[in-house]
Amino acid sequence: MKKRQMLSQIKLSDFQKEKLKDEIKAFYLDERGEEIGMIEQMQLLELFEQKLAPMIYNKALDDAKKWFVQMMDNLDSDYYVLYKNED
Image (cartoon, rainbow, N blue to C red; front, top):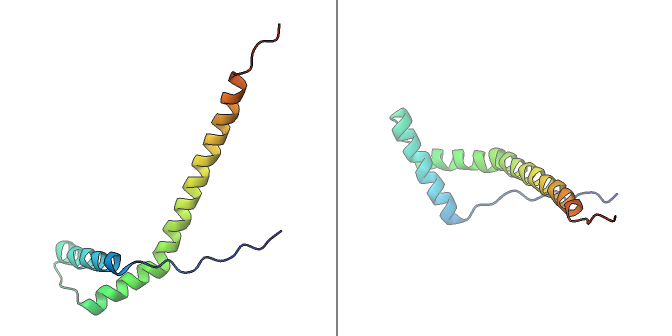
């Protein structure tokens, strides 16, 4: 069996990073009433990118697989519905 190649770390675009840093800053201000600096924003974003993003990615893959298996089960049953009676 062929060994599966490991995925490289999930990378966000500069635009995505800026948008997420703004969200982190707004969250801290809205929820905690605290200002958060650029360094802290970047550190949190890097933590999420390294630790949380792969978990979310894997969950999305698992969900897609479940959906695909369900669709294949439906295809199988739909296929046999098309059979004609051979009396």
